[in-house]
Length: 534
Ligand SMILES: *[C@@H]1O[C@H](CO)[C@@H](O)[C@H](O)[C@H]1NC(C)=O
Ligand SMILES: *[C@@H]1O[C@H](CO)[C@@H](O)[C@H](O)[C@H]1NC(C)=O
Ligand SMILES: *[C@@H]1O[C@H](CO)[C@@H](O)[C@H](O)[C@H]1NC(C)=O
Ligand SMILES: CC(=O)N[C@H]1CO[C@H](CO)[C@@H](O)[C@@H]1O
Image 1 (cartoon, rainbow, N blue to C red):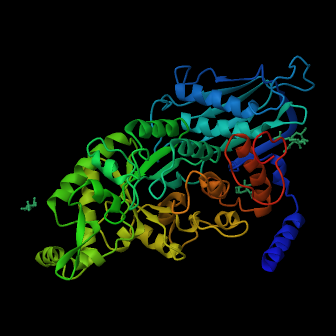
Image 2 (image 1 turned 90 degrees about the vertical axis):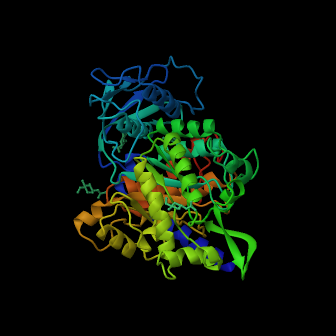
Image 3 (image 1 turned 90 degrees about the horizontal axis):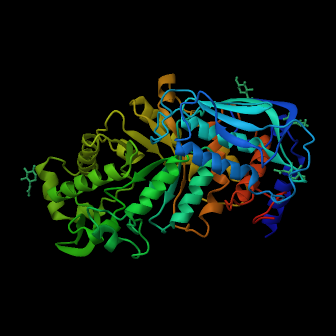
């Protein structure tokens, strides 16, 4: 107790003495755009008159429902929370007025009806000056990011008037892959929680939902081909994602420029699969006899591969993304070692006693299946560490502990793309402002040449679900993940913690206003608050 008090006093004193840096006057932009000029000229917006619309010359017209939907949504974020919503709007505006935001998609193919991918262009230019602001983007994905930025520039004063400064912004992400991992196996997450977090992801310019959908504890994915997997493997018949649910998540994400990458983790982490798929798991032995318990996927049976091919064929059609995450982490060899049939199989193939060779044998087959289905794979780092023959474009996700810089060096030296997750395991919680730790990571701070650095496609904040369900998911994730969001979007030199603190504090209040129950960074309150956290 005493120690906590001291800690509190120290951090309170530090926070109070931090000077407010110049750039915090730029409003609460989060993540900070690449290039930003804000003028002192202030324009007023009248909610009843202001419009977000397609600009002339845009390749996306009113038929682009993705943008129509976004215009409605952002109009709501900008004006919808005003406590003055119904006050008399006839009062004359005292200042120069901004009448509209025109959104112009410049390239011939707006990609309005497509799904976002790792190559998607998210860049945009935003010019705010009277009488109309112009948002230009090559594709709809950049327009979505620019709408978010525009909405963050608008401020409401005490009397319910809305203002924006004349500004000139040019922006694009530093990394292409900016992900959030949610785990729906350790605890089932209701659809509503997933959707709210997709909203929050868009507010922070994240673009990948890594859906760790199944694991040892439960199998909530309802397969069309193998309905028994969830019928037997889910926590209950209520705890499943039907094909309609999955469709909804993918569509909701697409409208926000977010990719959905499902993870079907094998050969470990598969206990729940065994309930609905006979002979899929390895029977463990106690001496000469089966012990009744089961281990990882049984890699010695042909039926295993027949099943996996059928399942992957379904996954390929259900999830439109170019990538499937195949897991491959933390395979426990104890059960394989106990099983005499496995030993026999290994002897026949000359694996001697190398269980990593057996694991590789399995994973290489699965990787080949995925590429024969014209998809690409992501795997956890052990797959690379164990010397599995990867496809050249297989992405390695680096997650283990403190030696991640060395791992990034080795993965990229072999020419593989990498995603960094190790410093961003948000399920680890502690006292204080751990967002600063996440914020201070520099993903490219490892030994390697330029070509190696270019292989780092991005990173992910991971919220594993052992201690997380719908009650605490959102506050545990936000705004801690926002720190990762800015690190992956903004320029390398955006590292001023005091400035970030000021902007993030306001950004968190904005998330609250928009219905995301983000926890506080530290002491204080949110002004202009209408929802929780008043
Ligand atoms: C925005 O405009 C107001 C009013 O003119 C001014 O006080 C403020 O400094 C401007 N903000 C920036 C970042 O220039
Ligand atoms: C499994 O498949 C291999 C190769 O296709 C074949 O040679 C082998 O006989 C099959 N084993 C069984 C038990 O069917
Ligand atoms: C970061 O670097 C860019 C380009 O060198 C520069 O324009 C920008 O002002 C810098 N930003 C910060 C926050 O130092
Ligand atoms: C975001 C927002 O509307 N902020 C306003 C909250 O209220 C204060 C005054 O109490 C204004 O200065 C802010 O602009």
